[in-house]
Image 1 (cartoon, helix red, strand yellow):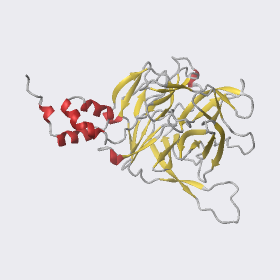
Image 2 (cartoon, rainbow, N blue to C red):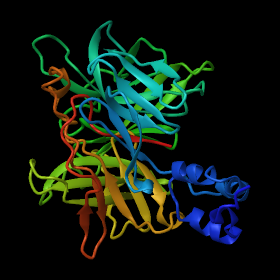
Image 3 (cartoon, one colour):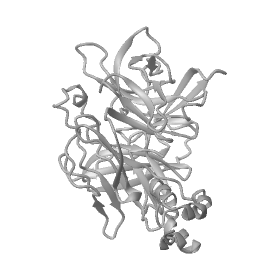
Image 4 (cartoon, rainbow, N blue to C red):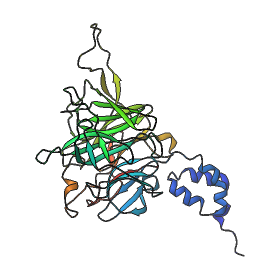
Length: 394
């Protein structure tokens, strides 16, 4: 019988110290199962591991790799690549198998899937339009009776009209999504209120607009979980829609420590890669007491954070997440970002497969100073025929 291999006899304390310095959940499983004696020591410790963080879904021309930041950006596996337009916890992806059609919600671990509507109804008139979903998220896990999906959609009201962007809601299995906005002069639509991101926070969907205002959408459900009503409140910010020195490439909403943050992404010009970020929190502006409520409703303003305060922010439309650095040994505060510069290119997904060029190179991490800088983790990545990159949420 051959002698036991020396690594099988590692002292438990040393083994656990190594284990804690392997932050990727997949790598931890591989480590624990490499040796029977290791598995016995590490089985209990695995239950105390910090929460997993998102992996990068990076689609080249003909396949999609899963790249993990915690694993040194190694590629864990391959999947076919339809267009991705959202993620949800537990390895759920929103996909469009036909680019502009064939919307579905798929769990890439279990294979479970749900139909997602391809048409939009206005909720008040008997009219339906083909729609393209640009970003989406859920209020609850898909197996919850009260699960509702919300998304940012583009549609064409008639053949000669330009495409419009709107927010919409549906439930899994519905044949159509609805916008649920009453057609009156004060409806929360128009310039500056085009939705740019969506997050579910404190029992409501919150849509961030291009003008840096928020549309808070509260849903009323019946006993069967069916949507009865959506109440929409436009929360306007005093300093919304400001001018910045650099080009604004994107804006995101992130739920972090029981509050909403707005993350603004900058580039020197529209054709340059990401150069910096600013992060803002919501504060209430004290209003002078004139004996009446201010007519314009400006009660709130964005306050820039001096520091991320130990946060790791993963930003992506409909799927941004916040994590605490002190749970991940060796990591530092920063903003991890995808290449999602095609969000406002309405024509991209309508092109032929060889003409679609979803950018996939502006991916990395922005760190605080001194000096703040952007680090790109991957070599130059050519455009994808199928989809922009996406986060795979644990």
